[in-house]
Amino acid sequence: MTTFGYARVSTADQDLTIQREALRKAGCVTVREEKRTGTTREGRTELDTLMEFLREGDTLMVTRIDRLARSIGDLQDIVRTLRAKGVALKATEQPIDTATAAGKAFLDMLGVFAEFETNLRRERQMEGIAKAKAEGVYKGRKASIDVAKVRELYGQGMGGTAIAKALGIGRASVYRIIGGETATV
Image (cartoon, rainbow, N blue to C red; front, side, top):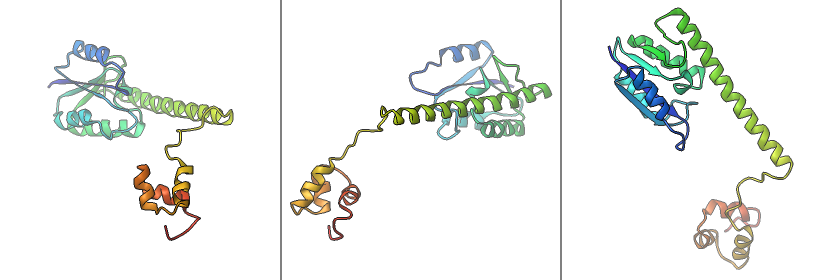
């Protein structure tokens, strides 16, 4: 019966020190860490390693439930897997202990709020981008292909493959630009 810790932050510039220290203080013998988004389980190799390694009677400890998952579906999948293995889930900063009915209920509520928070953040981001576009501030990424140069080379009789090679761009991009001009390029 061992307690293992899992620490996660979303971006490379965020620090794991506070989580690591809290998990060690809570008695975790091993703490697995990663810097990956919590909105999906894809690419979270440290979590996958822990999930495979945990055995009946072990405890998985996190500081807060949003460090484990930001999606209620992912959270429920993780909890089901832990329960099937006989592993408890606890959090250092929240009254979560899946060994109790109250702890399970609180866990589900927190999962719903974590997903809600993620969805609100995404909506605000989309609203901000739409507003910036309407004001002409946000124009997207700067074009990486000189359309005039493609047309100029094409006008000089150069073929699509040669234009792509000369400009270091994909042939499909050349054909999109000159597409309506001829089918024999």
